Length: 172
Image: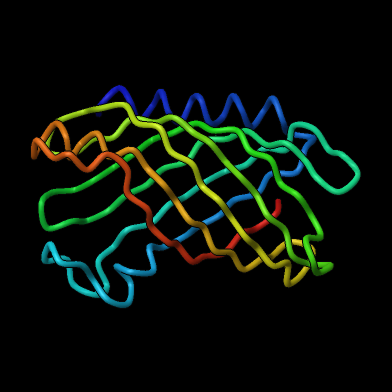
């Protein structure tokens, strides 16, 4: 077994124990373009590309809060499997325009792995989520990601790529 999986699990469990008394949000999002349309590089509609993220609430304010947490992205692309592990912080503003509508900004730094090439990358996720119940929300995430794998593998000049993800969020 590769060393990074046990280390990631250990890191996640450490964070979990540190913030055990705080609310933890677990979210799952799928890239909407890959889900419904595909892309010009040969990835058909239904191509798997998802983000799994855990957000631990650090500090609560009157109508906002700060978070920290890991995320994992996986995409089964034609040019090879894409994975990204990252750690980020976030700021969430609650009750934006509507009682159940919230807006969050999550800058992060992660490690991209693709075709045996590993590169670091910055990213930012902007999330809009609507609370359906106390523990369940529907969510849209716009991700802007530094695609250092493009530069390393394809000598590309494309540095940042934006993607839209739809998904759900559960408060534990």
